[in-house]
Length: 340
Ligand code: SF4
Image 1 (cartoon, rainbow, N blue to C red):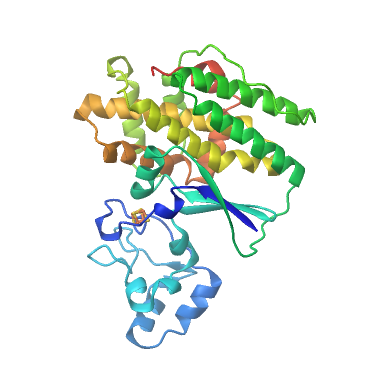
Image 2 (image 1 turned 90 degrees about the vertical axis):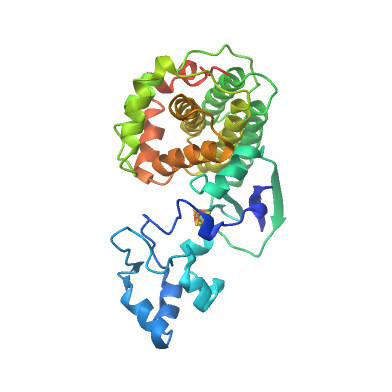
């Protein structure tokens, strides 16, 4: 079967002990049944340690929410004692994500990892497809999948145009509106791309909405609140911001738009992509206001924080997709209002 990824997928390497926000801290890690069965048979002192540190199919996190196998050097004791092949599925995969569409599969690296975020910010998405052994997922309509794949390719093309971010986002949202209409009305031709005037971002409305979501990090709401009272003072975007934001927007389009094959919903997922660019861009400017210059790693860390709050909470992600149809801050005019 075919497997498609961004071309930077294979370049990703976990930085392990050098990671400042390890995915082995603060996340509940469920162990798949096959790996757990293996762990139950590991003999000796390490087997006892595994036995003592697993409850109800998950690792028992310590009081600082660290995985009990994350050692002081920031390395994984299971990896060093038993080998990479005996990590559980979540630890093997993270931060990679996979989406299955019947006999077709896609994958990428997630923005919630500081090393992956650097790749995502600095690389335009170029998709590459390879053959892999069969690994089928839920069935889907191949004709609809083909239509959406073409639609997504157009969305990515619009976003990559050498025009201001405001104007390409306005065109991207218009195209998504039309694409949704075509799908809802069984019109199986792709809409035309249109030039559309951009609007003005309702930043206060967006920030106020985000503060209604359950925070993953206890400092997140405070940050949004401080940003919302500083909107008038934000410095303008830096020259490189637009390119990084486009790459982030493309990551969201790639990761989410094809999910519409299962529920017929496209527009809210494209709005998620635009909202991510808007909020991350604002946070970068706020960071410059409060801490001066921002280097690439700082920008990546900010994008990572947004991703953790929205992408890695199913509840929050669904709330954003619902809000896309309900709130003025998610209107096309608002989401296209970039200052770059
Ligand atoms: S967050 Fe990324 S770089 Fe850090 S430990 Fe996890 S996979 Fe490695």
